[in-house]
Image (cartoon, rainbow, N blue to C red; front, side, top):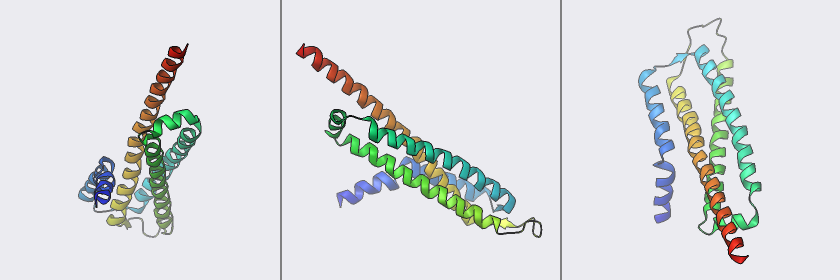
Length: 171
């Protein structure tokens, strides 16, 4: 039961998800829907941004995984910090991927309509709200994961200082 509560607090009551719901609430409140041409442009931007962020984030995860030597990883694992940081990065990478795929699917759905015949066709509000929720969650989760990368760097600096002090005391 405590594990479920911990996971609920970590993922459901998280700042990034609450922020995403706030963005979705704003979109829901201020838009009754938008024209398909505007939706197409929004999805194009989403695809561009998420694909760039996804590729950079994937590269950052690869660097985190390969950069540490065994002693440093053991140092971080004393309190499961390495596992937590890598877990957060993997989760965020998955969220980015879902946001990217969802944006591509919505973009393809917009392409199916001939806007020269019905130029004022309105894109459904619910899909727009869901898109804003997914994309903003992916971007906010990425932003918060950057703090984990900063923690990683702080651990690295602390580890270097500790190993330096040990070498000096052994000399």
